Length: 380
Image (cartoon, rainbow, N blue to C red):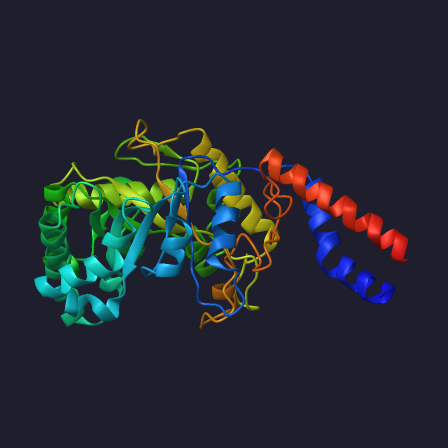
């Protein structure tokens, strides 16, 4: 009996005691969202994830699907959700009947208890080679928007799609930003649609990729938001002290070159890997901590970019957890802020999992632990 209790105490009760006695978690703040990917076989349940997200004061979560378990787990939480329609389902969404059926199954049952505010139709469609998929993207977005209107949901939920920076042909200097000429025929009507329905233009932006590709010319301090000489755009005389802001403004310039100054840009993904293959320069816990920690600080200050200084940047960090089943290089499985057991991958102010609990819960849990420890001492 005593040996059994010692084992249970060591495995289950001692970690809980450490959690309850530790300092309070740093919180994210209202300008930061998080990507909740699930390409893994070892993640905590959605209900536990909901508690973690709440403990970090994260108010925005982005999914890559419309997982009913996640949407149910976050019912009545003060968290706004972006949910996704996969690339494989874009063709179906062109059919208004199928689009409405998808909304009735995946969105409508969870409103308003779960705050779903945006649906992304596909991910990085214009970065591939499937021209049929590219052609189908806008009709699918229009069909889903029409279905939202018919269901009376368009004032709550908007429609967008996420792009990689590969759609930009020129990003330097930021004022000369332009879209790839071969994509202009797809992007111009897409921008017109965004302006019409007042939805954001979403970009997945990773300064890490630029640094990895050319570490001898791209200054590490410039991509990590550390003190550096920066660069000045000769056309505007605007100074940039980090690459992410320059990338965002290059997209604003590309959009403006197509006749629009009425579309907001949001960063649907950005992050830095904590581990990589031998040729993935800079993929370390230290650099990941600096990138995300400094980014959090910038957003907490409500900064805008040099081109849009009065518009706070809206960013979704990639990602909440390391995902062990993602294909590709080692870095792809190591973008998480947390391991699946809830411990931080590196230190940007986090001290443990679910430590920011209500005082009532902490008191009850501490009492239970005290009782268990007393029993353990008696048995031992």
